[in-house]
View: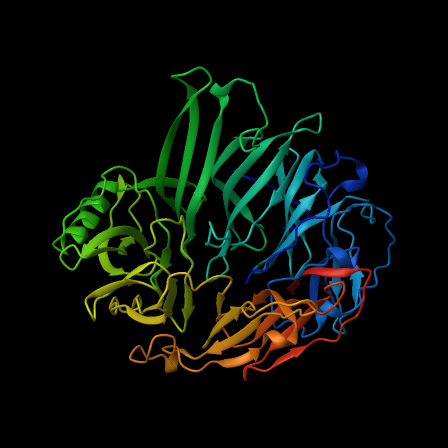
Length: 579
């Protein structure tokens, strides 16, 4: 169990990397860095954590709160002379100005005491603490009640600095997941661990689940799984000559926090033992796929997925094409995607496989989508059933697969061999795949393929985003470069209602709306959007500016982009969460 110390009576954003070096351990517990009982949030429209120099300013992944908030002046009422410092908590007023809020009992947050990241957690704000304590427990995570201002310390005995990462090319699932009713928060976090001599001893990764349903009691936390990795393991060329029999590691491959409060988790543990030639190491690993079934009192039972039934289902799918093949009966090697159902006690996940088509003409990637229902408390394994197949989540080379959802329909880009069941042909090309899984009525529709380009190297730096109704494409400048020319990115909007796969290759997505062109000299750094509207928040850099000044823009429902007025600030908001 995670120890939550209640210091009171009782959509997520991305966050910036901490300005405090990760090689520096948190300060020791003193009277000046004890977490306060609560803070006053009355009168503020939002809370933010703020950096002290404009060079460290980064932006939040929350849009639509204040149009120009990130560009406005922050005027804190305290002075700090730290060369490096944690981010401080500030209250954001309706006019965009901000007021510092001390979170320690002494009323003044000392140098290095503060936060590293900030995230929206429904009725709470979640902050990653830095050098904050409750008695002798280090508050590596802090919950703040948006209404009352009560503070809750997720207390641990080991000083650590948490890092809650976003999606990447290798891990495309969200690390922080909130249930639809906001009663359950799931969090994958990695922490650098320090010893008593302020030396990094390793890295611990853990998956936590918080029950947020009782506001009087406060967040109730449970660690589902955690693992430690020695610090020297991933240091290339370190020449470490220690005892290799203590070589150990842990990988959290993918997980899904379900709306009923349960979770589905895929992880790998491994150790190394000495064998063969002197100094060589043989890996010993275990791949795990578990369903975590929670009871109302917070206890849970871990139920393993029936890998034999999964293997039989995938093997049957491979043989249905007439080309044979079999799927190994060991642990499931990859689950790139999880999907939720309107039924809280039901969910789906994808298992990729390679299958032959067309009498041995070629092999293409497919995924078998299986369904599962919450197992009983007495169940020995989690049984699954065949639901459908798809080219979405079918790449076998990646650990997780990104997909986009527009009005309940799923989209995915594939730049490898794609099989088109309509024409009974396959080719190596770049394709946008559309899939209506029909989860609400259990009536999946066939894949629809829109060929974007006849090659499989089209992607490059292109990136897709979605809003409620549209698909957006960010495209880097591809023309000839010359001295003194500083082109930026292009941003286009596509309407799925106009997609037509009978058009020629390259035009099947229809005619896009140009929101921004390379001649505007802006390199896009991030785009934030939600499925509830068609408003985008765009953050970029002016490529024609000597200092590559950061700019902030809003794309409205009509597709018009407007930039906020820029001001040079000494204190800059980093992450903002609406109260």
